[in-house]
Length: 255
Ligand code: PGA
Image (tube, rainbow, N blue to C red):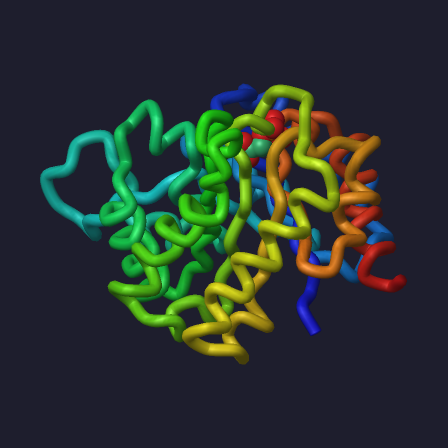
């Protein structure tokens, strides 16, 4: 049985005050909520602060990126070892914003996946198609290609205890999420694709949906069979909205 997982991707937002306030509000909203794993991924400079204020709560710490190198002359980067040292658990890799603005290739993302596994951290591998690819009927081909970069280099077993986030690029930050049926179809495709290599691994891998998830659409999306949680961007900056998403994940798992 897969356990739902909701992660807040704060992206490049916040300051010390906001980190402290938002965590306090989240702790309050989620104090009695069980049945869903929850994490927040603040900007890297605030990870230590966030870890401190999350202390004693069930909310885990995530990060938004990692370098492929473990140490050395790589100015401006952060390693898996440092993220582990600081207490992060879930590390987002391959987000479309990094693929687009930082030209990250599938090969580099597969390397990041490998260093995270090696460090005992949990990769959250983001995949998804653009609007043009979607309209050209290439959604499945794009997702398969992005997953194959990891499957072909590391094998299906590498997906044990990891997370995939299906995030159609056209749905990110647009307020226009995929419909539950659309998302479910792609999630099933992703799981079946991995199952061709290893059915047991495919059955346990957590596949989150991301892209304009909010308090209004979460319940419908999360009740889909192959949607195991959500990667939430803008709605994760509001404690009440994020809590609704988490509670929807708990509810969906009970139905
Ligand atoms: P959004 O972002 O919820 O603001 O669409 C999701 C993401 O990019 O992870």
